[in-house]
Image (cartoon, rainbow, N blue to C red; front, side, top):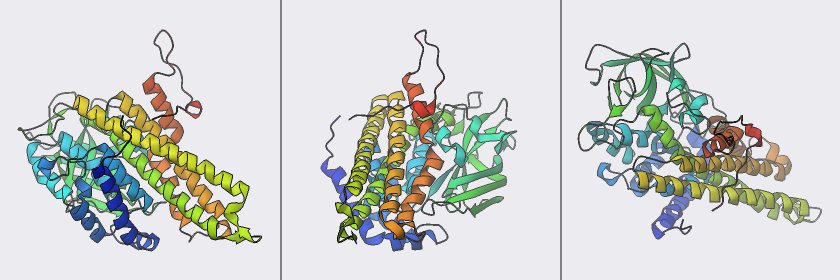
Length: 446
């Protein structure tokens, strides 16, 4: 691994940091989250035009920039540093890669250029409480049972006659909660169960904004910078992402030479493969937020005086900040390594990250979530009485830290699943052993 960034990668980070410093301060963040979509639409279009942010990791033939997981992670780190309220995570990290991998040639040609230029946002509609398991980060269920669609609730898909590949040949019925940007995205990728609960399969369906029978509501979320929505579907017309193979495996196949590389890959499998790249991006975003919280705290204790001297000159404060700094740097190294591992595995296999990249991603995300929570807690405490007031900017970081672990964790499950993938608790005869997630911790060294 070459730990040095290229000139292009440094340029992405430097340009994005400068732009967000000018356009996305705490006051702008608070104003943006109170708009109907929950983000500054003009800023999002500016980021798309100047940096190609929505299509950063999409191939050039569909209008993307053609970068990889490392560049996406660097962009997410700067977005996290500013607590940028934007469709970046929902669109660029979660939804767009699935359209690229699973979509037919026609679907990719229609949707990806619009996503890349910022004109179309997308959201992955899976149960919010199951997002970690859907991405293969906190457990393994590649059969897609988490989609429900039967006795477990969720969304059920039914085919209206034959020729279900055509738009309008399928109907969706059900409800999905806690969908990131689900209330405002122009395109929804809805995971739905077909063929009943016990003998069915999970597919991904495209649902356009304004489809008949679709109702969306913005939910009150702990972290307003990550807006969430409830999606209700009442016989909503939908189009399968890719072409269902018609068999019991639930796979999809591409159509024509322009189709993605995921022919024959089940959607649940594609989601699990996406997990390593998504974990690296989310870990980098958490590192950016933690670094910003630490920086603000250091600046405050340098200027705030008590007993005739700066608060930061007291040894207890120095020790506390040093501990947070070590956590942040540890998390940063882990996030960069996870991004490198995801990119390397995808380049070698051509089919997505392997188990090693998944382990690195899960551990990096766990480390970053802990660092983010530690930095946010230190920010509140070391700001003193003003830090405990709900209106202070420090609480933006507290809410982000708490919300991220609820959505993508918890930390002990991330580590437990990584240990299981690595085989750390396997018996000599090859049989598995019970894992106590609270006792699992493995450092990622670069």
